[in-house]
Image 1 (cartoon, rainbow, N blue to C red):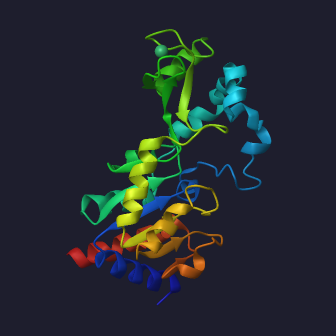
Image 2 (cartoon, helix red, strand yellow; image 1 turned 30 degrees about the horizontal axis):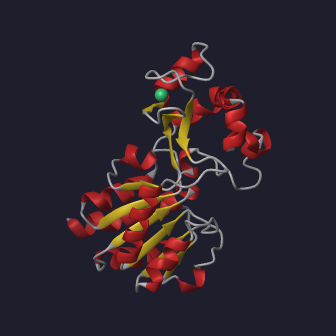
Length: 255
Ligand SMILES: [Zn+2]
């Protein structure tokens, strides 16, 4: 049996015997959907985009600069589709095996795959938030206004500037998703970290909370993480391919 298949079998055994399964996902789960990992060198985006564009102070100074970049990048994001990694997590929630997803991603692909219990630590690029009255609006609609020449797009309630509802540099994490993520991690008996380098604080404290409360941990990532030594199962395979094999094994068990 190949290593991938053996790992997938062990993965299935572990998730089926867990009673509080939690998944935390990072950029690595979405790269196979065509969304580049901003932090990986050579992805091109950081080279292309001045970091101040996605900092709060840079945005406040000149919001139109962010939307100028978005005219090019937003359509790429909107065209992205969930891959077998997202599909697997949606299926596990559907089967009431998975209690929730904690994600560092802002792409909305878990929701597209059908996941309901998604806690977005860094917010979402699918929504725009008014900087004056805090009302949330659809980013798709905001981008349509940018396309028709309103840059920056303005709040339809109060005329304030709309900002993507994702966490920019210099901004605090939203409180509610964080609190819920800590609670999920504390109660987990199996914590799967998928496609995250587990280097970004404070998100990387969550697997630590899980482990300290007695949880086992599985790490699926193509590069080393600080938690590899504590992982009961460590998988380096492509997330999409691995997830497809896991789905096959799960389906075979069900039939
Ligand atoms: Zn407003």
